Length: 291
Image (cartoon, rainbow, N blue to C red; front, side, top):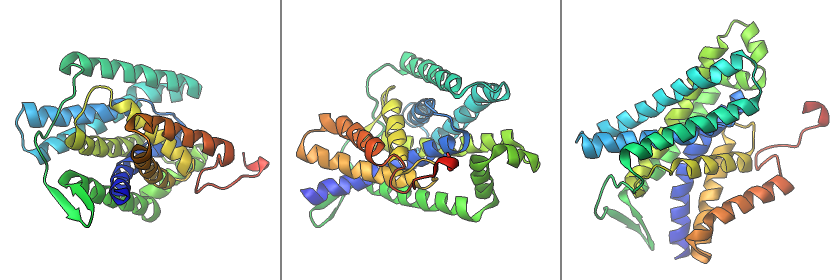
């Protein structure tokens, strides 16, 4: 039984890792607490549902449509909400409040159109695979594989490409990067597009596994934020480690206590890290002059 819950936790952790990488990408580069990330997550899932269950399109095309819709919404949010605030040198608190407003608007529109009940994309019993005492469904295996592939691809993108170097430079010193002739606003748009793509991948996978409702985005965003803090703020790949750890701990909490307590466990971990290791697992303590 323990191995089964650990396996479930690793699968959930793979999804949390994808989500956390996307959220951490925006926060580490723009210092924006991107609450509208939850709206992007929900929109991608519902677009996938609409194309597959209502329009009757093939599953892969529906998933692609969900990914595209999430990227488009993320770019719109950057262009129409965040960019004007950046140009006016508005405080980050204003961007935070605006992000909350975007989330509320999008989620209420989705609830108005689709209702509040849970939507199931793939009804019925899924095919399962068994390895010893561990049993995983087909979609769980796919989630795990895609999670591993996305994390590896993301790490390679940051470490081996010119785009990755620009992203790290944007996080370190955007003013100096602009002085070298780089279009900061265009680079920010690319960052939001990539972040939205990661959120959309996770959203479509979870929608295929357990279904969706209009309010699934906020828990996913909070998990992303906690994973980023636990992994280490300022390190682009660390949120994946935080997400994996949270997935396993949540699953073990369900095994030992109850599923109703998993959110309490998650935020208890957050508090412990903030008190005892605020720099996160992969972070390092900085000298006062570095702050």
